[in-house]
Image 1 (cartoon, helix red, strand yellow):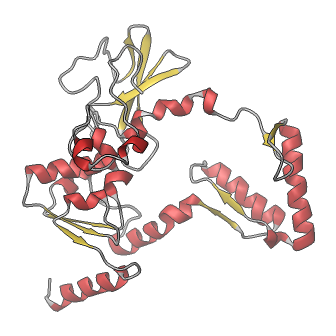
Image 2 (image 1 turned 60 degrees about the vertical axis):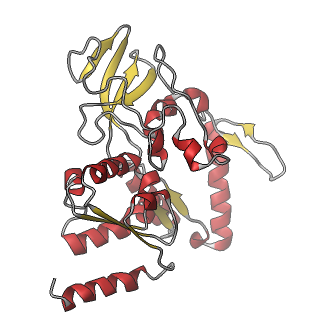
Image 3 (image 1 turned 45 degrees about the horizontal axis):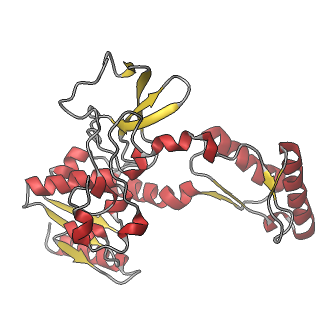
Length: 302
């Protein structure tokens, strides 16, 4: 959503897109060629070569009656820089930071709507209870809601034991919050049935990074990716999952057509449109493929 006082960019939703061929989608106003959410990427209104009104520093710049504060998008791991427009109390809009080395002013659909998450109208400001499947939710107070949750947990544990309950917690909690939840589950309730999105999303990746690369994260930069002779993307629809980084890869491929891109994925995704080779392997055969590649590297003394 554009900030107030800026020219509106034509909005085009996914529902309308489903009925149109790719050629028509590519010709939509404001779109750029290419697949995925990055299709509609556009430079920030404060793009390269454009003077920022009242720019005096990286944060707290005055824009008429507003301020602009530099920050980082909190969605995926690309780490795009954003400029948050606010009046000191409310967030009014978000645009890409053209000086940031990750995105150079570009934002995907997630980052460009980041300011909408601060809208109180869409937030739950009080608890609601539904005491039966056929009943509607009713507004409650915190004490009643917490007492109800505690009593249901207590009754279930008393009747079926501590392992009859489980906790699945967010991957966006603070370290202290994780500690408190683990103490609640393991020390108070007496169950090991607690997990989080962090394990589902990153635990296996961290182990793999540590064993193969010696560090718990890929020891490279985006510039290394852009300068690579060959990029292999495995099991990731990068065009949708990390559209800004995918756009950088797409631009690098345009500058250096000799760069080879290999996509290994049973699915035919939009990321495959950029690939020189798409290996649509059967699900579950990726380990066999990687073992074969390792065998070839050793056999050919690469």
